[in-house]
Length: 102
Image 1 (cartoon, rainbow, N blue to C red):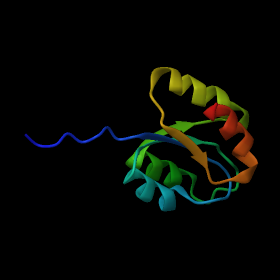
Image 2 (image 1 turned 135 degrees about the horizontal axis):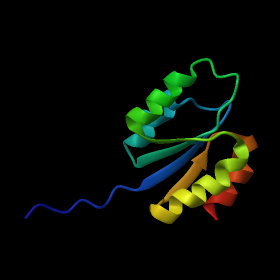
Image 3 (image 1 turned 90 degrees about the vertical axis):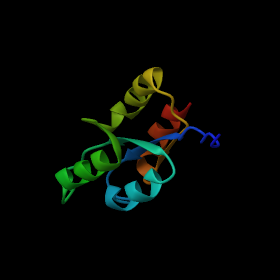
Image 4 (image 1 turned 30 degrees about the vertical axis):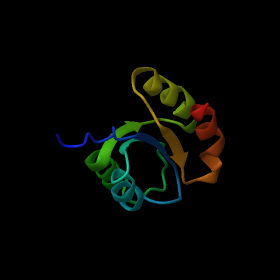
């Protein structure tokens, strides 16, 4: 019988202004885990729709209206889905990301 593959981990990424673009992190992280991205909008994104399309190509996308929603949305998602880890690439959203991880 073929060996059973272990389940793929679920990784939540908080995407916020600056940092690494989804076009850069999604393909790499999707090789390691199923992705769910909390997308915090900003007015300075050059290619907002392109970012969202990339995220959806590689995983789930949860669009937020404001950074204050990170914790509540992360917790709401975790109530219904198993999450193995959460990370962000931006320092200014780190506190919300850490609160969501707890």
